[in-house]
Length: 182
Image 1 (cartoon, helix red, strand yellow):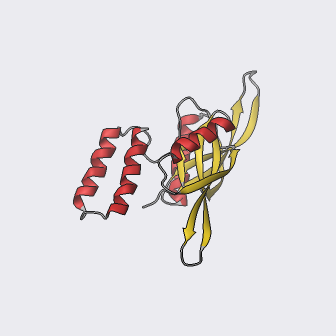
Image 2 (cartoon, rainbow, N blue to C red):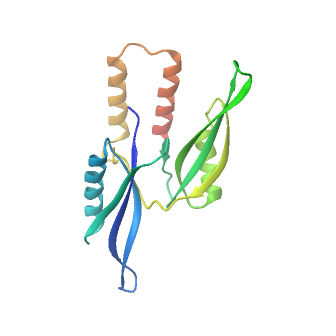
Image 3 (tube, rainbow, N blue to C red):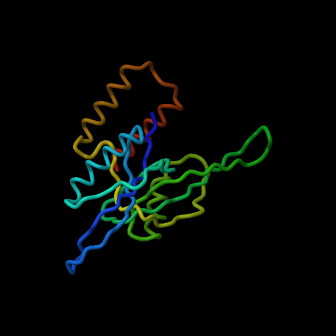
């Protein structure tokens, strides 16, 4: 099952350094199975984040194929990746675009982080655009309480309960293990 990310806009009152209060509407991303679960999870996350009253003003499905956090980075950038494939039937190049959310401190670092993510990609690709997003934080379903060992054990138990996979699918699992190492 693929991960579905929901962008939730939250309106709340924030106290600044001078003691003044401002009303802000900020976007957050949450991993959920439905709009209802996204709202529930966002309420839980924001209750831990602020003691002020808040309101979720909108929820929409975010168009991100992958989310990649990096240590020592505080902003989120949207990287557009164009995969290039050659269609043997028509003799033409076929381009497919996808978007990744990459954490970095500036556009150059976002570009470098995107290259790092794509380094094991076998096919041709280009990075036609990178732009900063207003997203304040990302709340994945597995919030870090589960260790890497527990995730690997669960993954291995799933693998053991299914028949052997063809080589093409094994490559996908190798990417999963690479992501865990980072």
